[in-house]
Length: 138
Figure 1 (tube, one colour):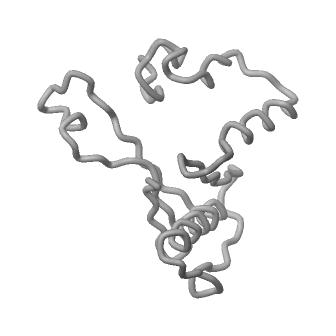
Figure 2 (cartoon, one colour; figure 1 turned 30 degrees about the horizontal axis):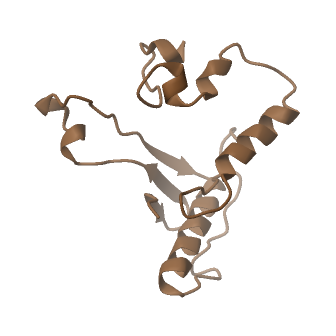
């Protein structure tokens, strides 16, 4: 398991990557630089993150994290609906792929940039596009 999750008081969550290995140290001009992306989230998606952590904790320790001590009530927050979907190499099902395909199957509108959902290698770049200058993001 390799999840990077920080939940603060059941209200604010942080996830993503903040790596410190040599390939991430841009001032050393690595051959294949990597940009880490880290996110702060608020609202109900924080509960999804907390549940993913609790599942991992139970797997690693056998201890169940349950109740209000671990899961604070979370109300609606902001105009964007979001959901945390745990996925990883230790599971038999590719959750993210199934969620994405399910969302696409019920979509009522299309977007002109369909290639953005292709794996990075098929887009012709080395990873997720975070720069508006990346050719694969246009």
